[in-house]
Amino acid sequence: MMGKTNDRGTIKWTSLMLPEHVEMIQEIWRELDRVEKPVIDEQQMEENSFALQRSMADNLTVKVKYHNGFDFSCAEVKVTHMDPGTKKVRGIDPKTKKVVSLLFDDISEVTVL
Image (tube, rainbow, N blue to C red; front, side, top):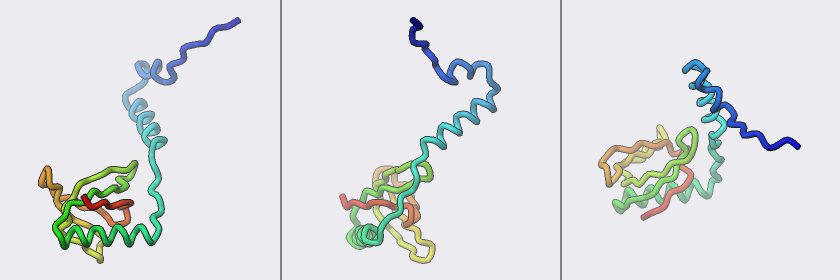
């Protein structure tokens, strides 16, 4: 009876590969881990818009969950400007004081803190 083999996949071959090939394999792995941007329904978009407008009017901090191209990220923001023409939301991170700019279409959830 044959025992289980301990196959380490591509790990055992990477030392024999060119750096360009290793980079290509890592890029493929990143693509496989990619999370598609969900379609947000109109009710959720209105709730997000209302929370962002309330944040701007009352100088509140909001937690914004957004799609960054590969996965979801979260940011705490004090909204300073909403531009309906470019569909961008700008604000300031209260901890780092850095300017945050997000596309409204990438925002999936907004929570007032």
